[in-house]
Image (tube, rainbow, N blue to C red; front, side, top):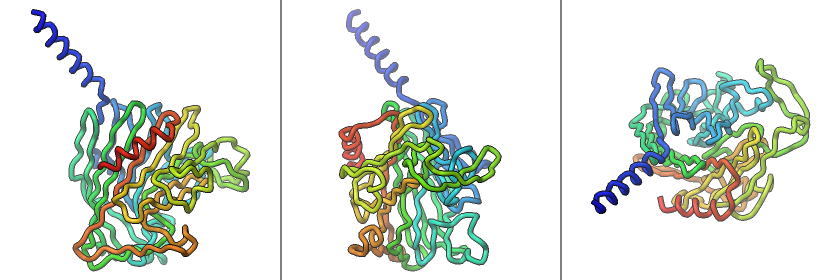
Length: 343
């Protein structure tokens, strides 16, 4: 009887532990052109692929406390947010010079007479969307095309969504295959894995800024007058603030408060990526990007990387983005970086 009691107790303990694991559910909504990612039935993010933003993205991105960290423009109007750079939407991956085409800056704002200079990433299909108690896995395919509709690159991407306590984690692994001749990815400032954050996480600044009101009306104000922006950067090399731009680092932390909640967004580069550790295209106005393939402008001409993929060959890129509810220490971030490096 004693052994039976111990076995029952152990079973109950295991089951209760399993039930305590957050459930990560992926919900496909093809008519809305998106896949929702839910954690314990609450929205974390959505993989969206509408026709008007020229690439698939993750948007919005929500903390464990329910605060959105991504800018809502141009998909929605949120009072007090900037209305610059309409191509900055959610979390994305693309580049500014692929066979002389600009995939990075493409948006609905580009006039028709200039469209031939830009490329578009078209979502192809959801290969699989697997829910789970520890993580959720989303596999997708896309195509990088020129304005004539010719495919340069096939894109196979796997997103892994997971949690550690109140920290929400996105791992992205993208494999690009050249399918229509050699693809030249020329050294360029505009790249590569990026997020555009809400105004709260911008760095405080001075000067003029264009903000939108609840009706979508744009007004120009002094940037320092709204007292919303309170963000700051910290790199793995100990560099802070706006000085992190054009520096190399294994990871970068952007932290501040959103609606009173302490929040930190950390992007991790991976040792398998070309150009590791990456240069950072991290700006004070809300653009936060790891530019794995760009070097020339960041090094003031001392370095240059002109990457290429031969026809039929592939290149793979790995990134992690973690959303902390709180302010993680350097030791905590370094531990997560080492865990990611093993993948």
